[in-house]
Image 1 (cartoon, rainbow, N blue to C red):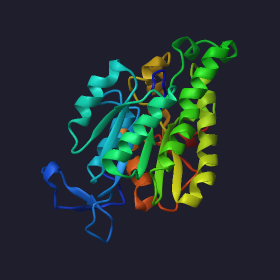
Image 2: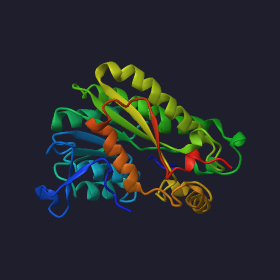
Image 3: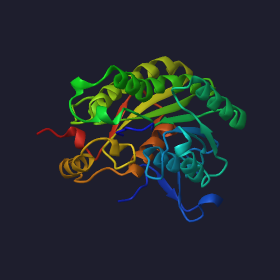
Length: 292
């Protein structure tokens, strides 16, 4: 959702619930593709960028996908986040944790090579990283420095193109790429500033990448999530007020949950979304439809 750092029921409504459970999730029901007994992401491999802690949107996506059989590779940016990511990844079977600073192409290349060596393929990628200097997320956009602008665009937007290229080399039978955007990409949100510009570039990149990679049967979509109180969101001034405002005015009269964003990502990387690409899907309790 919003970022200043690098990076009711929770079930998907269209799924049928099966009493059968797998060994790693013995207490939880397993969702299957309607009309079959197949686990949604059985034998699938995913790569997750942007996990900071258990409240991260990226983790909610990983958790939802893992429960449907996916094996997962995680990346972290900097030693500060390494321990958290390793601890969370340790909860999932056959996971992989890799360093990856998207401003370092050698680390990006090394991460994809490691995934290729361990799993032999990649079926989906979830991009949930964003960054802008804290001082650029307050005051007026017109005061944005060149350095802040370039940094925000490189990490928050260009990285999607960078990672899509690396992923496409491992998606030999097609695949799905999902990124995280926010309403500030199309409307002015106070204090979002340069991040809104970066998210607009991210959504445009989603469409262009979908056009380029479609011939390889690779789908690229964005989720525009409502505000969620994550570590990265706290970099935006007055986040608490924004959460209150959106919760009061959205049609559902509440804020979206990270698990709901995770379930949407699960849908988009699964075969249930095989005809969807180049789209930005709102998961914000309907806030985006409201006028005055």
